[in-house]
Length: 417
Image 1: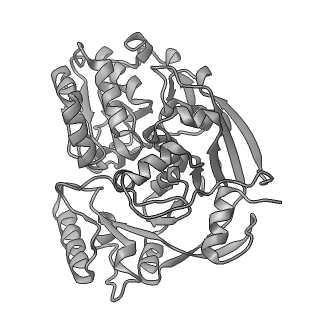
Image 2: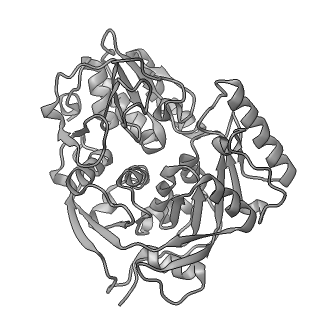
């Protein structure tokens, strides 16, 4: 019996001929990312040695720019760490800053067949690049930085075969909400995405799906490699790589099919992503106080330009705050050049610096008691974006932008055909 993408990479990186579900393996790590939360005084453990500075990346993203003294102290500790070990790939506040998972995409830090860890739960985002990427605990990331390895238990794999093509007002976020709404939790399992429909999705769209797979509680989320991915990576990284595709006789726990052409805009109701999606038409008219576009899942150039297309010629409704957060400085520069930022600002949006921001309730748009937000960010758990009495609906950037215009949850197809 053959192996899935995840099983093949686990085998290669652990020096084994075959890995099967249930196996526990120790693997060599190619990329280890530390971010500002790791350097906070309550989390940091002084490191006397690192495995290889060239395998480390340090990113400030969750609390940028520093909103308080604790965050500022963590940034200072991180800068001292970078200087001490001569870490070249350092993304401080400024020109090359951004959310870590977006920077992986911007700079080609994850290559097919490689392994990557970070202690942020959405690290599976990197699996869009045909690699194994996973979030690990804080102590685990310290161990990884020192030893250059970690262990994983191989789970069973569920494969999603994508077909068809999304219509203009339907996005990869809607495709994910369809999967999460129908199939629910994937705890201890890997997800593998392939099929003819992948070719119709941009890398940014695919990355939305791999990033959001963390909300399925998936271990790893992997995409097959194709010409679009090869072109993206060779533009950003000169290192050679080899694609990893599943064996023709790979064994899957389940094989499921998603026709992208049949999807419609969906919204996840407050407090949960899994088994909690409804068509936007069922929620039209639900009043909102805030609309938020950004995060590692939906702060890309594609997302921001889509929101601008919806908002062009319109204004944000009175009493509604529209906050737009590019996922990186590179994305910010690109949408400045395209004119999307000017369109959004003319409509009444506030543009925030690249940061995780309100997605994790840190800053840049935290909610007050009893407020309602519709967001394209990664989570809608109770209290995630602020006061526990607030309500957070999750949708695509197109649906969020349409809702900002109307002042209540709205269908983007009314603005974008």
